[in-house]
Image (tube, rainbow, N blue to C red; front, side, top):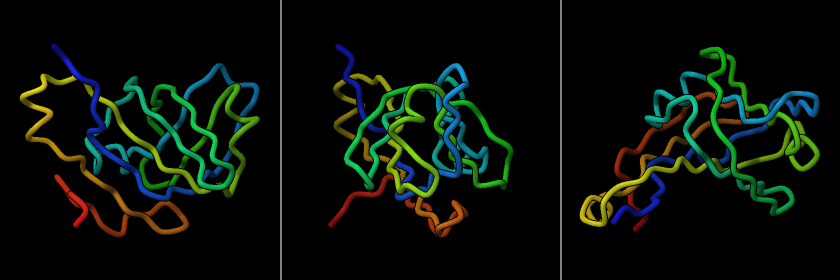
Length: 124
């Protein structure tokens, strides 16, 4: 059996844009993807701390170092520039693998520049 787990978390990212006329997805700065171990096309859940909305979509790789967090398509009605979000990267693993895992957490400043990365972090 496989279970769906959170493999990485981008903690308190700031939405930099929302493009209603784009097909869909979320564009994330390549530096953030690398730090978290996430890949383009991977499914993520985005939780909006500003209005409690949760949305599930796939990743598009943004330009490295620009700090982009752009909600594309329908979620542009629910996520606005300046909103604070938590992005949870998903993965399917065996139950045995899941028991040994804890997500990588990427912390960032208000411009989505990395301040700290905790690999395999578990809250105390």
